[in-house]
Image (cartoon, rainbow, N blue to C red):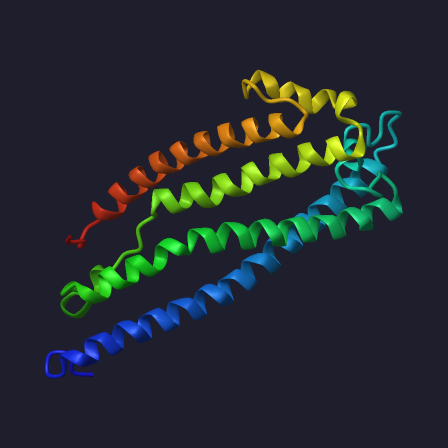
Length: 217
């Protein structure tokens, strides 16, 4: 393809880049969802069986608390497989939410790269930087949503007053409580903290990436 002789092909090339990127995002979403589903599911299955066969009086004491959030789960042979199913669903859902939100920043990077001269003259200088805003939105959304869902599940089950462990979060999230309003306050606080940490992380990573030998802005 001769982009200099036919400028209009540059736009066509950009379109192709975006089409390929979107196809890659769809594929990666499925792969990431499958990977997280397997990891979460097998992890819960294995730690349940490990707890089951420890043979101690307090076997599964803490794992059984998951039954508050996952109806039907308990430290037993049947509960282990129920837990695996829950783990797969939760892992896949969180992976899709995280990746789809983070991928929003990739398209803008591809467009900027395709429009720059480096895309033609110096293809080896290409680098994907981490967009701290989208990373913060992705990770923050997942964690905040998890807190809201689990807290309100306790409320719906009518066990909010018995959720001693959940109440401990008030020590780290001022204003949080095991209630609908409390879950919103806690979720907002978690989102802000994760968002700020993501900006710091991405800033450090991008500086290191741009400082590598052979990279030119």
